[in-house]
Amino acid sequence: MVEDKDKEAGVDEVMVEDKDKEAGVDEVMVEDKDKEAGVDEVMAKDKESLDEGVNEEHHQNEEHQNEEEVVYDENTLDDFEIFDPLFGDQYEEQHQNEQNEEVEKGHQVEEENVELVDEENNVPEMEVDMTDFQDILQTIDDGIGTEWNTDFMVVEGEVEGLIPALSEVFPSAEHRYCLRHIHENMRKTWKLSEYKEHLWKCATATTIPEFEHYMSEFSFYDNKACEWLRKIPAKHWARSHFTGRAVSDILLNNLCEAFNIKLTEGRDKPILGCLEYIRQYLMKRICNVMKVMEKATGPLTPTATRILEGNKSQASQYIARWNGGEKYQVTGPWQDQHVVDVKNQTCTCRKWELVGIPCKHAIATLNEMTANSEDVGDIYRWVHKVYWLDTWKKVYSYKVEPIKGRIMWPKSLCPTKLIPPPHHNQPGRPKKKRRPSEDERLSQSQRESQKKRGRESQKSSQDVSQEAGATVGPDGVTKLTRKFVTVTCAKCKNKGHNSRTCKGQGGK
Image (cartoon, rainbow, N blue to C red; front, side, top):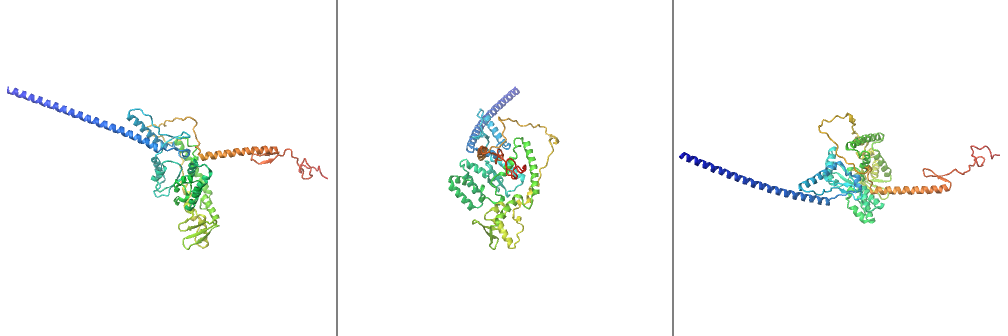
């Protein structure tokens, strides 16, 4: 009996332990439910914060686009191809982010348009970020191997975002603006040709006093236009504010425009075909320049030789006086007087410093030193080395290697088959010619009007000459007609025949 009671007591204890375990399980389940509830609260908070962040970011993007909207004019589209594939990734990434935001919000919204439309031509454009130009300029830096202290110069047109990118990648580079684009922007408000003359006078002045003199003349002509021009830093467009580190005084970006016009035929080809066209063009150009170098005579390049000879002819009108040290005072006609520092190879006219070729004042000084039996040497030794013929040959010493045809190319072992991207043909005939700027359109219309007036004057002169018995040749020269004109013989002075066919009809 006692054992049975003990067993029953043990069973009761086991049942109590099971109940305790069940109670513990219930407590664990309650704790799990509390944790799940906490997780749900955290997820709800995260979702709310995510939605608020997305909405705030979307609102900031809209404000940023409204504040920094870039509208390119026709000149910008000429000099900067907005549809360049280097900037296509930016558009696709932004478009994909917008679609992801729509999925997270859970409702359909109108797709935000990131293209800017030109008001005149309805040409879609994109906002260009500074980081895109930084990547391009960094690639150029890696390719040519420039250092931070390299004398580097960049001449550009109207490209938004390039200036801060240049200051980041090339902090020591001299940045210049194309004067043609400045004039085109000026021409939108001031269209007369006198404004262009004043602009070029101010830009080509090499000294600060001369620059201020022409700016005062411009201000007297039109103060508003002059104040508009003063807002552009003079160090970017005026020779008087240029440094001599670049050894060049160019004001236009014709160097790249001359290369751009050669790519007209290869511009509409695919990327590989366009690169192949450029490679073949460079091979041909290097060969043509080598032929010119073979015909060049003298130690300098043909252009430098022509400039130096012109300065020599003008230097004969100047008189140099020595101060007993390293400087000379050079006096010439029209109260032209400057100081030449032979040791530093500078002149107060700044042309020798800007271009690197001795100016007329410097050549007059060298002539005076030669007359005083000083060892000056050959005059080309005073010219900067960038104009030497040997330097020119070193530049073109690097050749573009020819490649084999496509049949000889090795086959790729890549298992993935690369397919071309989807292409959609735009309506209408594709345009191959560049869009002419406003200045070019006006110049073309003026030429057409001049041709029209010439044709009208030529037609009127033909009418008058026909009435007077004369004719107008294809070269526009009026000639007398031989119709109804009687020939007079030089021997017998009779009419109807000449001296070659004279038989003595009117003789003795």
